[in-house]
Length: 512
Ligand SMILES: Cc1cc2nc3c(=O)[nH]c(=O)nc-3n(C[C@H](O)[C@H](O)[C@H](O)COP(=O)(O)OP(=O)(O)OC[C@H]3O[C@@H](n4cnc5c(N)ncnc54)[C@H](O)[C@@H]3O)c2cc1C
Image (cartoon, rainbow, N blue to C red):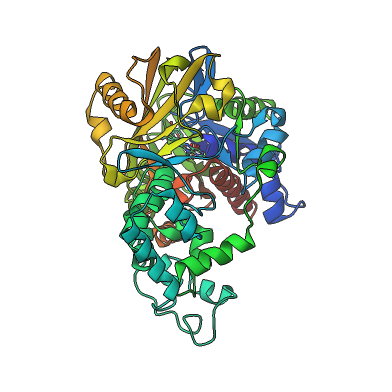
C-alpha cells in the first residue's frame, strides 16, 4: 500500500524535500547517505501544500523595465554545491552565471569606501590593508593591533556556541589549553566575542555590515557558530583572532580573478532570475507525479493513532509522514498540540522584516556610479538603507542598455523603520540617502518596493541548542521532519540540504 508524505511549504526547502521523497537522489544525499540509499519512489505518494498562490516562497523573480530581476535572493554561495548541482540536474546549468563584479564598498562616515580585499566575512586578517582602506580610525586600528599580542585566554568552543569536541578537533590547540578542559558557560554573541579581541570599531564598521547584512541582523545578537561556522571553528584555541584568521586564510587561499571569471565563482546567479530554479523544480516534480497544491494553507495538524491529519481550506489531508518546510513561527503554530516543547522552541526564534527598493535611472543621471557590485551600511551610520546592490553592474542582463538599476535593502533586526512607512515614503527616504552616497538627484525612471515580513530568522546565541531541543522533542513524533532556514543557515544551498535531509529522515522512519 502506498504511503502519503505531505510537505508543508512550497519554498525551495519544501520543493527540495518533495524531490527526494519522489525518488530523486540528489548529490548531497548520495554524499551523506551513500548511493545505495533507497530514496522515495512509487510506494510513496508526495503532496506539497503551499499557502500562497505560487511556489518559491522567498525566491521571487520578475520583470523590471522589461528585464529579469530578482526581488528576493539574487545569487547563492557555491561552497555548499547543492544549489549549483541541482540547477545542473534540472537542466538549467547553462543558465548559471557568475556576478560580473564582486568587489564592494562600505559606508564610512557618510562616504563609500572600497572594502579591502581578503576580508573573511568582514574580519580582516591583514591590518595593513585595513589601514589603507580608511574605513576605521587610527584608534580603531591600534585597538585591533593589540589582538596580535595574544594576551587573553584561548577562545573556547563553548563560548562560540560550538560543541566542546571542537576544542579537540582544532589541531592548533596546545596541550593544557582549553582543549583539555573547556570551561563551558554561556555562548557569547559574535559581536561580543570579536569585540573583546578586536575592539568595537572593527566589529561595528566591518563585521556587522557583512555578517549582520547577510542575516538582516546585528552581530550583537547572532551566534557565530551559526552565521560563520568556519570562522568560529578557526578561532577555537587561539588567543588572537588575527592570527587565527591568517591561518584560516592560508588554509583557504583567496581565489584569483581568473578563478572567478572561469570556473569557480564564490557566488552564482541564474540568467533569467533565481525563480527559474523554482520553475524547473516544479516541472521536475510534476513529471514525478508529485501533487502540487497552491492556496492550501495548513491551519492545523493532528496526530491520530498512526497517522497525521492536516487541515486545509479544502478539507483534511491524511499523511503517514510530514516535512514541515515553513518558518519556525509557522511550524510552532501547527505543533502546539502534538509537540508543545518543540513548538515553544521554534516559536521563540525571532525574525526580522526587510523591504527592497528597486530603482532605475538613465545612465547619465549617475555619472559616477562607484565601482563594484554595491555597498553595505553599518548600523552606526543611522541610515534606513542597510545595503545596496548595483544590479546593472553585478548582472548586466538585468538592465536595458543605457540604464542603471540598483536595489536598496532596508530593515534589519530591531530596525523596523521601513515597516512603519508607506511604499511612497520609503522610496523617498531611500532616494534621499542614495543621493548622498551615489550622487544622483534625478528622479528615477521607475521604482518597485518588495516587502518581506518576518523573512530572516535571527540566530541568537544558543540557537543550535534550541534546535537540538526542538528536534529531541519532535523525535517522539514518527516520520516528521523539519526543513528551512530556522534550523540554522539562511542561504539557498543550506535550505536545499535541509529539505533533502528532512526527506531522507522521514523515509527512514517510514521504513522502520
Ligand atoms: C530579500 C531576501 C534576500 C535574500 N538573498 C539571498 C541570497 O542572495 N542568497 C541566498 O542564498 N539566500 C538569500 N535569501 C535567503 C533565502 O532566500 C531563504 O532562506 C530561502 O529561500 C528560504 O526557503 P524556504 O523554502 O525554507 O522558506 P520560504 O521561502 O519561506 O518558503 C516557505 C513556504 O511555506 C509557505 N507556508 C508558510 N506557512 C504555511 C502553511 N501553514 N501552510 C502551507 N504553506 C505555508 C510560505 O508561503 C512559503 O512559500 C534571501 C532572503 C530574502 C527574503
